[in-house]
Image (cartoon, rainbow, N blue to C red; front, side, top):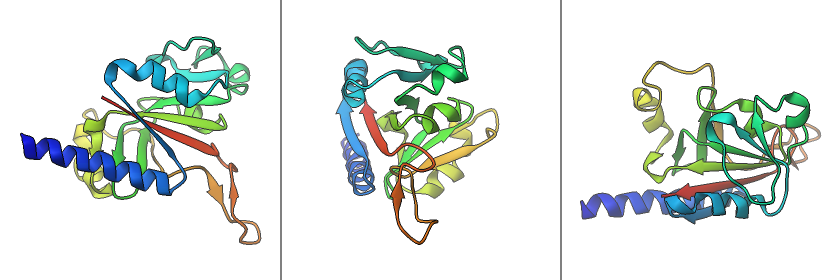
Length: 176
């Protein structure tokens, strides 16, 4: 058991370093501190968009519940909060899928906050794919997305631009 706990801490640390190297921000909190950690990651910016299955309590922030709020209201969101399916330590990637939360919540706002259960951090991308039934017991979802830091593109004149096709700022909250 002690070896398992040490291996788990190693995965969390490896993920935090990898995600940070990609330009992401990592926050750690106990499970009962999740709302405070989400509020900290939102840093006073709002409105905040949540999937209706993952509504949070945020003092002082306008909370928009997707899809109930509608597309026009969702388009005003500055921050989107998304529960992650899993995370990959070696690449600092976060796995999200269409079955757990709408893609719009993670792609539309300028800031994305991903909530990660540390028990879902795996070492390699192949670990997610080989154990697909763990993440999707009822079959694969319509789409699976790997988020590796802020949105960036170098399509135009090979010049790197951040915040083009998605959030320019990303946060990972390791809750638990």
